[in-house]
Length: 538
Image (cartoon, rainbow, N blue to C red; front, side):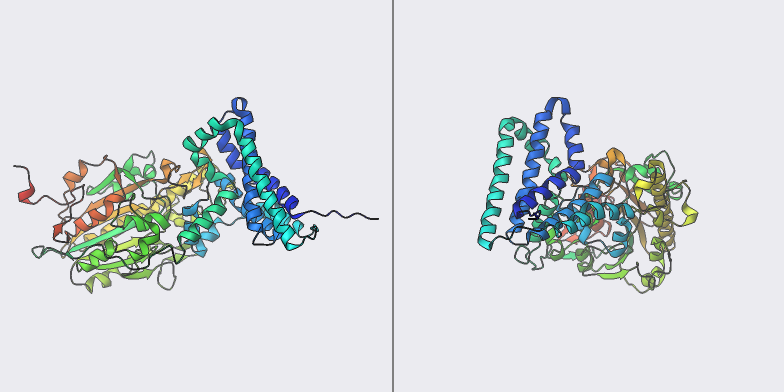
């Protein structure tokens, strides 16, 4: 009689868990070995591997109570292959905020992350094994017996983890206390846990959608007869240490360097490591420690306060949107070739956001704020962020698959994108210079987050803030004040190297327009404007 190879559901899940442990957790083991020397901690490292295996199995059995076993196994395999590619090749950890960032990404940005290496890995380690699972017959089991066996498998996985941890209680206590970031690289357990947590946090019952007004009144002082025209450029993925103005070995900001009015601060830290978090946080009236991303869409922000004070606010976006910041102000989307006349086969250029501003300003009466949200230096397709005439640093990486380029080529392409930002900012300042007869003009440039360019094997951005490298949080911050501006340049220059964070931005912006909030004059810690005579020291 011919025998057939038949698996029980539990055995299939154990097999998938072993496969994922071996193929999807390379980054986890690399990170762990970097902390624990193999020769000294080999038994503890083996224990960690067994615990991770048990955790994958426990997750899989829990899901299998509600979904078909093969479907659960397929989802775990494909998730593990996708996450493993980004962890192993780009050093990216997938947590709740990274998933939030992914969900806010548009088709263009998502397309830049797709490549043949990703397709090959997902195909060989995700899709192909998943398809093979559907060819293996499973032992038919009544539903109640199936649930009992899954429960038994879950208990067995839990007991295996406990037994493996028992001899190393002190070591695990140290691991959980001092090396918590290692858990970000457990695959697919942490990404699945993060997705579930995000779904719960974003559920209708978890978020109060009642709009929260933060200030009762906001006004421009009646004695302020001069109107403000301020351009805020929200940079994208720019890191401070690649700006020539900040002492970078290359002059990536030659046009700004020629302007004596430029003030570049050297120690600004971002609120997050992704646009989805940093952008709302920048314009929030809360500090980073109090900022709640789930409430941001329903809470009055700095732009709302400016509008309340009578300021005309325009948001132009050449990125993936304002992330809710501009929900209640005039908004124009410049990733549309019908709107942006400076588009080519590589995308729509930031410079196109300056077109038509003459007409807009001419139609306003009073103070004006214009926010320009750049595409900037968004990776991995850095070569798409600048036209050919800005390819000053060569050879530059001409692929969105960074693994095909050398470190020098990647940096060259990234630096070219900064060079283009320099030209864009210079053009925006030139526009403001033409308005100095009518307005007090100024420009503020501040990037949302930085970017890793291969340091320690990490690329792009979006790492959990707790473990994010400085490259992802140290961002450029520039102020230009026109001849008619009352910004106190000398006071600001005296603070060029003082530590600052995105928390300073909202107060600074309100101070630039001299806004009185709830009968109090706004003054940032930077003291952007000259002190009133009565405030000067005697």
